[in-house]
Structures are given as structure tokens and as C-alpha cells.
Length: 252
Ligand SMILES: NC(=O)c1ccc[n+]([C@@H]2O[C@H](COP(=O)([O-])OP(=O)(O)OC[C@H]3O[C@@H](n4cnc5c(N)ncnc54)[C@H](OP(=O)(O)O)[C@@H]3O)[C@@H](O)[C@H]2O)c1
Image (cartoon, rainbow, N blue to C red):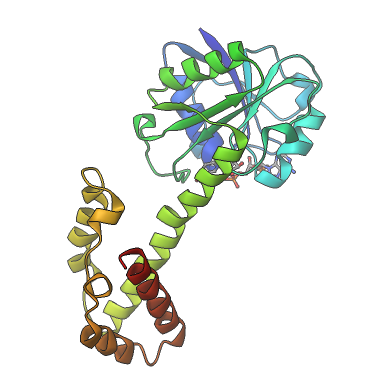
């Protein structure tokens, strides 16, 4: 059984604690947060602590606090030679204090405290300074039911950047579509099957092969019509032109 201490009670910390506490092969020995943990999120029988000096022995300590505080918290840990990992996509592993064995346990998914999430849909990217620790982190991820990948800090940064494109930027495009359809009293529901199909399609073919639409077809007439419709939205018009040009270059 792998014993785990989670530090942080935000989106990631809360989901990790829930998943660890329900696994038969893992033991959540403590849940640390600097402030009181929201009772509605609390997990039965977990030992909550608010003072780093109260932390007990465990196989691994997972720091799941905001990126800007990971390094500071690792400096404040009152022990050494234990395995301490963080969950960030962008913080290099070397930012963890080297008084402990360092590692990364980065869950590549979008987390919200209140949304339900199955860890089989959460790929975990692990990194560590030694082989045994990497094995332990892989086993921990497998016990959560997650797909697991050994990925170094440089690769993780590229992955985090890619995640911004596929998640945050795509979502902003949904938001623009929502606004444009609202303006004409259209229900955003109509677009949802297209959103799902677009996402599903790349399970079978590459994003390059999956591209369709007026930009790829070089359908200038339709493109001009769309740009005219965007006259009142100069920022969206600029975005439309830039993405259209990019698609045409890609499929040149
Ligand atoms: N959210 C995601 O979708 C996602 C996905 C993958 C990876 N991550 C990574 O996971 C980590 C946690 O992200 P999150 O979204 O869970 O963050 P979050 O919801 O913003 O939670 C922040 C946590 O950090 C603690 N904290 C903030 N400042 C602190 C300080 N000075 N000292 C000690 N604790 C402090 C907060 O404590 P209080 O409750 O006391 O304020 C809280 O427990 C980050 O490294 C993030 O990059 C996030």
C-alpha cells in the first residue's frame, strides 16, 4: 500500500484526495491546507492538518498548490530525504527543494472542485530524479486508474503549452460562437453535436486530416461573407483572418 500526503485543497488537491481515499491500494494519511478546508468537500476519516510540523511519515507528498507557491512550500517542509512531488504543468522539477527526493505528478486534465471526474480520463505525467521513485509514481497513477507517461520537464512544458491550445483557446472559440449565435437568437445547443463530432473525429484521424471548411477549400466568396458579418467585431474578424491564413498555409 502506498501512503500519500496531499498538500493543497484547491481543484486538484480535492480531486486527488477523493480518488486516493477510495482506492484500496492507496492510503491518504493526511490532507494539509494552510487554511480550513471547505466542509462540503471534506472526505470522511481523513486527517486534516494546517501546520507543516504536524506532517507524518508517508511514501509520497503531493504538493497541489498554486504554481507560484510550490517552491516556497517545498522549502518550508520540515523534513528531508522523502519523496516530494508537485502537480504543475509549468513548474520545473528542479524548483522543488533538493533536501527531499524530487518528482512531478502532473495530471493532464481540467479540474473543477465540484465537477465529478474519473481518473481513468486523467493522464498522469510523472518525472523523478531516481528510477525507484519513478516506479512508485507510476504505480500510484495506475492505482488511481490513470494512464501514465514518463515525461521530463522540457516535454511537460510543451505539453502544457499544447494543452492551452486544445483546452483554453478552443473554449474561447466556443465562447465567441456562443456570443455570435446569441446575437441572432440561436440556441447554442444546435452547435453541440458539431463540437462533439469534431472532438471525436481525432480519435480516428489526425487533426491535419480532420480539417474541413471554407479556409481549407479556399472558398473566398464564403470567407468574404463571413468577414462582412464580423464588421461589428473587429477582434473576432482579425482572429478569423489569422486562423484562415494559418489553415491555408498548413494546407497549401
Ligand atoms: N486546475 C487545473 O485544472 C489543473 C490541472 C492540472 C494541474 N494543475 C496544477 O495543480 C496545482 C494546483 O492547482 P489548483 O487549480 O488546484 O489550484 P487552486 O484551486 O487555485 O488551489 C490553490 C491551493 O493552493 C493553496 N495556496 C495558495 N497560496 C498558498 C500559499 N502561499 N501557501 C500555501 N498554500 C497556498 C490554497 O490554499 P487556501 O485554500 O488556503 O487558499 C489552495 O489549497 C497547480 O500547480 C496547477 O498548475 C491544475
